[in-house]
Length: 166
Image 1 (tube, one colour):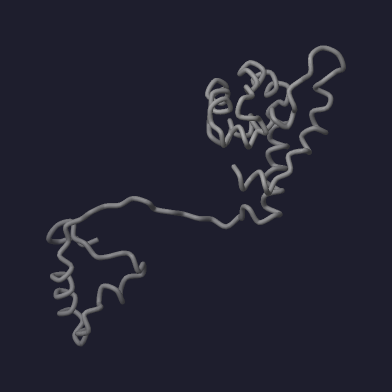
Image 2: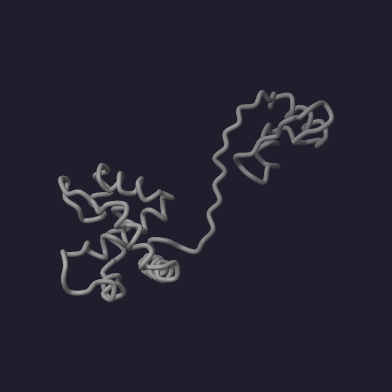
């Protein structure tokens, strides 16, 4: 959240939301604060109540929203009404503006990143596999068959059963 706050200027939300508020009555919640809450709610897949709780007790969230440590956030019903006023199209437009600002400042890229974080511990006898493959490729005596013939440097050969290797 800290990096996002440094990269994106959320003041553009005030211009879009000025018609939501009329003169008279009590002072409204800042539309930037409200949009940031809806933005975080979307980003972290939170319900209205969960977002209110995060904004009340999570100090990093409070900092991002611009609330002091003692200040209470808007009630979840206020958040719901703001989101209804904003509408799906309004949120999508403002969200895309945030993404565009972040992209223009190099915070996000369009480059695809795929990470496989599955760790599987397998009982594989690499020395036996090395001997089997060495006998198939005559002259491969340097002991680096597995490293040299693997397309992925982190991948290793294994066996499912006697007939199938993977």
